[in-house]
Image (cartoon, rainbow, N blue to C red; front, side, top):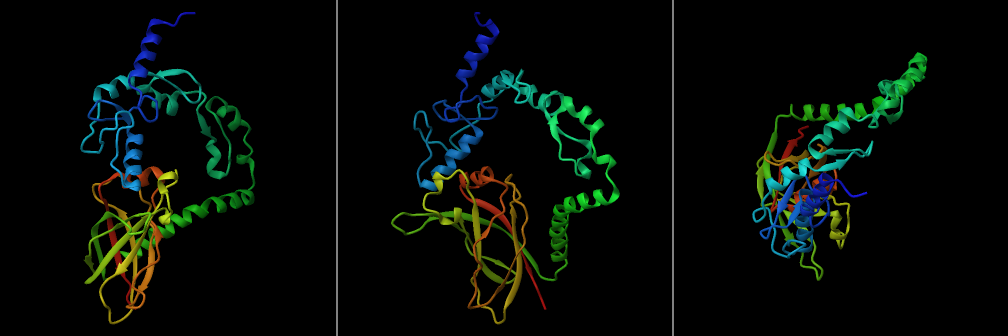
Amino acid sequence: MAPKPGAEWSTALSHLVLGVVSLHAAASTAQCTNGHLMCAGCFIHLLADARLKEEQATCPNCRCEISKSLCCRNLAVEKAVSELPSECGFCLRQFPRSLLERHQKEECQDRVTQCKYKRIGCPWHGPFHELTVHEAACAHPTKTGNELMEILDEMDQSHRKEMQLYNSIFSLLSFEKIGYTEVQFRPYRTDDFITRLYYETPRFTVLNQTWVLKARVNDSERNPNLSCKRTLSFQLLLKSKVTAPLECSFLLLKGPYDDVRISPVIYHFVFTNESNETDYVPLPIIDSVECNKLLAAKNINLRLFLFQIQK
């Protein structure tokens, strides 16, 4: 059977707007100076890889230089892509991309959903069209109070950890001596035969002391560009001389103009003249995608909070 004219046109257009890296039509695109397209995720990945390899990022198609300043979005392509058909991952039906997200979240009868009794421990996941039948037969509403208490105690563990973190932050905010500053990590290379990427901030002053922050990728493994999983860890160094041990809590958060997602984690250290640098501790980035966003930037801009603990 010959393809329908509309389907043939959509297929032809899809091939025209393929990204040169991921080879799929991207909802958000970057365009090199010669007009070749990259989806936003692959564009960030190319910039991050170039940073790790100390190379100039180039378009995979024509090898011209690419950067955030040299590339631009192609709104015409993004608009065309939004109208192209795309397959629902649940029911496998075709929908315009602009309508697909709503369909998958609200309308698809095969979308994965959870039982309304999940709050009392029901682990069921299944297609939406089976939800009514499951909930009618779900055993959790008939469980005894003691059985439910055991389930709820387990579910409360993660909630307690979250509350403990926020209570700790609120407690720190009541300290007398609190300081914060914007910090800018700049990329450098080691002097080794095989150089490694690391980041360091200029010296800055907080709590009347001079400090420096350092950061490294994947704990300085040899070829982080070959790894799909990417992490950053950082170290806080006291550069001033102190007359008595300086006990501090500290945490790093995203800067005011960044969109990277960082979960707050509080670290603690006692600084002395003999022990003036912390161990490398994880920068609590959500995932490798967020790490690539930081690596793709010219500099990494974050906000440091320091809390001095007084006896």
